[in-house]
Image (cartoon, rainbow, N blue to C red; front, side, top):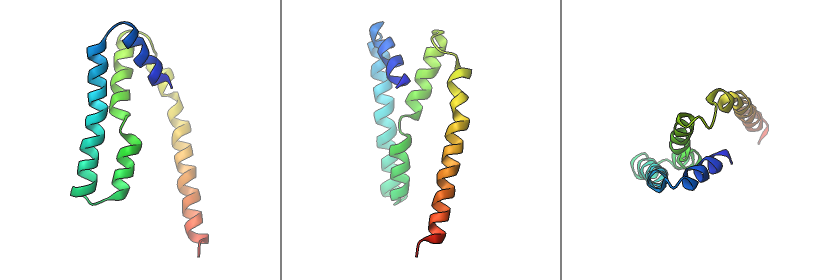
Length: 103
């Protein structure tokens, strides 16, 4: 959600070239990732991971640009990561338990 707000802020300032670059980064990331994951590695799991994380390079770039404009504080933006990591660990734990219980 926050990424959309930052994107709109850059668009409102008429920085269309920058927003075009962000779209190209996003499209290039997903295409390159899928081209590597499917035909080269032959991995459907890799393809799912590419789809799940294809916006990360664009998000990192947008956060860096927004920080340069003093629109955000990166420390406050990244304090959610421990919650995300705990959620991922819980998900992996439930998956492991499910694999033991499942016939």
